[in-house]
Image (cartoon, rainbow, N blue to C red; front, side, top):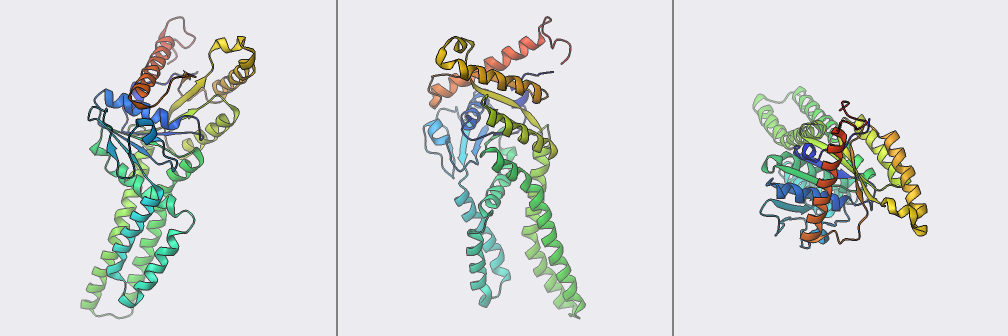
Length: 345
């Protein structure tokens, strides 16, 4: 059975991840959802984790890594663009401040060297981005709703899997430090010295333990269907469909709930009669049928292609109205007695 996306049910969650293949309209849809939520009085934070930030252009104001309130959001809408480089700088500085008290003065040069190497290591920006993202999730009670405008699907899948991976890595590091502490005790330290050593070890372990707890809580929140869900945006083309199918499977295997799919930029039926558009329209219809067959379990809503400017207050408000109308029409149609889905929902 094909189900329609229920926008009210989607908005009842606290965390919404919006993702999909690059160029399908993720940022626009994330901004539209945030506009809808703010208009209904919900204190909303829109966070971009995509290195190619679009939110400043969409809202017509400078957002940046420090975030800002959207002037026309009625006091309910704030936006934040997490810069991977800024996140990495912040993350490495926090590591530096945590490590300095526990490193001998003559070894601090080595610490600085290691931090410099870490800055240029593969995956360092992703790890820092994860750290920033988990801090946002940790403080989610400050908002009624947080919407993440994510990077293209492949990057996002790695990012969403990192909380559990990094949690296990942190647990291993803590276990190593604890074993090292026990080994030092076996070397015959005096009780008083041992107590001081335990205190120093606890001070070293405290940031790791706090980090592990934050990662675990983020992973639990992302896997809780009452708290969060992933919303895909795709255009009716073969490549976005293939990527969306793989991503839906990967998220389901990771225990992350999938809320639905927004099928964006559909050509109207009139396009079949236009010679120039007939081929594109036919290709879209084929993909839409494949979506119905392969992703029937995922709720979805369709939005037509438009020539309107979808940015700024007026553009996003117009698109918000279109999205709400489309979902309401689909839900109403699904509940009609003569609908093929009547009695099955």
